[in-house]
Length: 259
Ligand code: FPP
Image 1: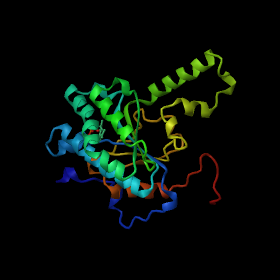
Image 2: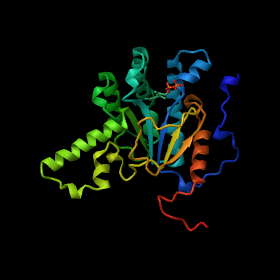
Image 3: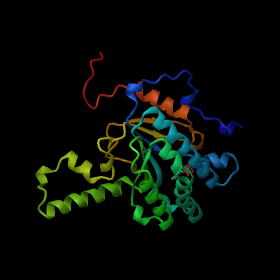
Image 4: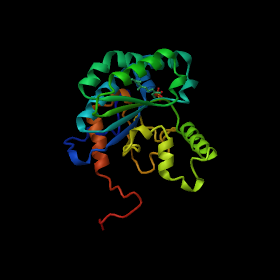
């Protein structure tokens, strides 16, 4: 049983009180620890991903209920292709299963699906599932559920720089006119405006690194690392992470009037 114990589980703190006025608009999550969750139960790694998918369903509803505007989930990175092909195949099938079973609930919760990443490199069935889910939820105007699928932040920046360079080469843009906004607009988070940047970035499973996720966009994000593995992450864990966020003093490089 000990292997199932999560130290530093923010949800262990009872009586979490959230300020509904200060719920982070954009929450991004690096969903880590599926494999270790499965291993601790003597299950194959893919069992962890399956449970992780169920966690995605629960956390989508929980975040939407809390008033989060954008929930970005790192589902597959440009580096995840290095995994054994059985695992990659399973991960590619997950969005198909997810949307097959969950689109009606997304619509019921007024959640719109978005995706960012090099989706043209995904298997055709995965692309179709994503495309159909985007289409089926396009009229929902509540929370945006934004999946990062075959996403990598450095690749995103290279693509963005190429886009800007092309505009300069074609004479549509002067180098001196390139601003932070130009870069924002060239990145894959542009369609999320005005919520391009996460207010809160959560990484589960005890790893404390960013792993090529939203490197530009997290310049002023609050980072919360929890030992809870993604399949064990609950609505209570999310609330506790948001409580941690609300306890922080966000200064964006300036000063507050706190002495
Ligand atoms: C990291 O855990 C997790 C992933 C690479 C995949 C994340 C995918 C999901 C949680 C399911 C996504 C669901 C949908 C609907 C797309 P890991 O395998 O690296 O865990 P480990 O570090 O313990 O091995």
